[in-house]
Length: 130
Image (cartoon, rainbow, N blue to C red):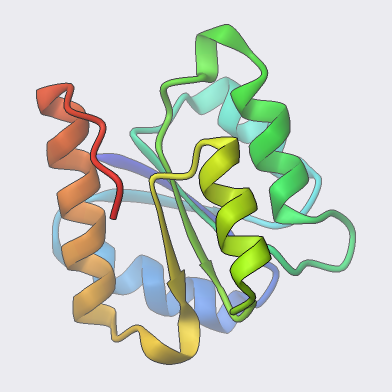
């Protein structure tokens, strides 16, 4: 079981993710916008699912802030957003994201597979990019 934080402003979407990941025995919390940095810092999750487009803060700003903190640097992030631009994908990976999925193209089963892959890689210390 992994501790996962979902950073998503659409609660319906976030609850769908949480419910499916909970079926895999993961401990999942949801947070929106600016509270995310504090929750990630406090909880130190095994994985963060991060949206980019949110009303109060850009998800890449959250990623940048967390990765700048030495004690949080190793937390993997999976970007899960509707932003499909190559520039955003490249920027997210350069900032340290472990993977990038487009919501419209991602089934809940694919999400679970990617989450489990990233968590397994982290447990093995391999730091895989998906």
